Image (cartoon, rainbow, N blue to C red; front, side, top):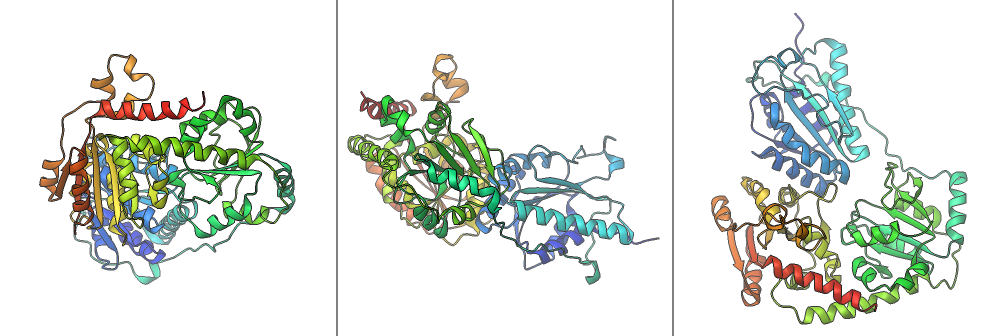
Amino acid sequence: MKERINTAFLAADILKALGVEDVVLCPGSRNAPLIQAFGQYKELRKHSIVDERSAGFFALGLGLQTKKPAVLVSTSGTAVLNFAPAIAEAYYQKVPLLILTADRPDYLIDQGDGQSMHQQNVYRNYILQSFQLSHRLSGKKDLAFAQRIINQAFMISVQSSGPVHINMPFEEPLYGASRFPESENRRLIHRLPVRIRPDEEAIAPLKERWRKAGRKMIILGQGEYSDTLLMKLEKFAGEDCIILSETLSNIQTENSISGIDKVLAVMKVEEKEELFPEILLTAGGAIVSKKIKSFLREAPDYEHWHVDKDAAFMDTFFHLSMLIPLDLEVLLDSFGHEEKLKDSPYRKKWLSLKPKAEEIHGDFVRSLGWSDFYIFEHLFRIIPGDTLLHLGNSTIVRYAQLFESARRFRSFSNRGTSGIDGSLSTAVGFSTLSKAKNLMITGDLSFFYDSNALMSRNLPSNLKIILINNQGGNIFRFIPGPDTTGFLEEFFEAKHSFRADKICQVFGLSYFSASDKQEFQAALDALLHHPDTALLELFTQGELSARVLSSYFERLAGSTE
């Protein structure tokens, strides 16, 4: 009888050799072979996370930090489904991730066996690729097949920056296997790194069109900071080009506009026509600003070129005319030496709106009382600039768009799918491998929903958490609509009276709190100087904070009258 191939040990051996460094292991029985296989490698960093939903986001955070795929391991059944939110986020945020789900053999599916369900292609709508191994692997052909699948999954995740799934059925017995595969079983498949260059003949008309356009706009969505990209953008953009860069783009040039919402709010109706672009060039991930989306969606005909090495169809503004499947730096290298039009007033007109918006902003913050707005204004000025910021979704990331002082930081947020689930878990995962100071700023619903992130056995001491507790989803108080339904507080805002002090006590975190300006400064100082993981809970009134934010935009808009 042929010896059956132990796919768990085969996968662990190959993935380690290919460069995997981190494995997130969730408890279970069917995944015992995988736990034993990865567990025998002392060189691997192994992270034990009980809650699979939190574990998925923890692995996402590891991938954000290392730029390498962490391996995420689960048992069979509904545990597999709990990875789904994090996998969707990794898919849209383009973070490498390898998911290994243990399964029962196919002959036990739909037969009343425990923890069994249909797992093949279970993530099909938000995964780069899914693979299925068999529990019946034996012989050289089966071995070659398994080796190819494991290598291919790793290569796709790295090459295309996203999640890849391997479903791995195991027969009993599940425990006791202790040997590594023989050395001849390890077949590694490599891919030569190639920096894709543009087709000069195909790109020549674009270069000429770009050169002749007098009104050019570049918008940078979510992305990573890069010294070289920053330098190339500053050299590339002339007087005929304005760069709009969001907080999460992590790229702020001297002549760019980062407070997009503020600037658009002070723009007069009669100014719009001459500020619309002829060509819009976009790069990076999701755009937070709803105002720029509205502005460009209502604009008359213009060309929209989207730059993405994977040629993603990002028709955000409903004007997409050209997909450019290149890295942005490669495109800039190709375009950068072309002659630019001189004496275009386009960038100057855009930048002339910035001082006006900042003057109104400055006057407004000087008279602020205790509110969410006051907290952000204070935080972004006081927090040391070498801190890495992790921003919760909804109001948190939108507030960050309003403050020039927020540009001092490298910022991260789960904006791939923009859900409130997993923000804290992602920050914990990222901070675990980071040597820098990390600060998570989160809202109350997001925090309580993801509080299992604190169940981690070894919370990183370099992570501090600020929880702004305004007793509900405050965003629903200033977006139009919810207040007209009669269900604002109960169902939209989900108003509550929860506090985080007892949660911190359960998980062994130091806890600080503040409810006014006087308490805030002392509590913030204590948090930032605390030697271990700690949380500061700031209590504000949701209704008041919503009114303050609304009055801020009314003040900006009033300047156009």
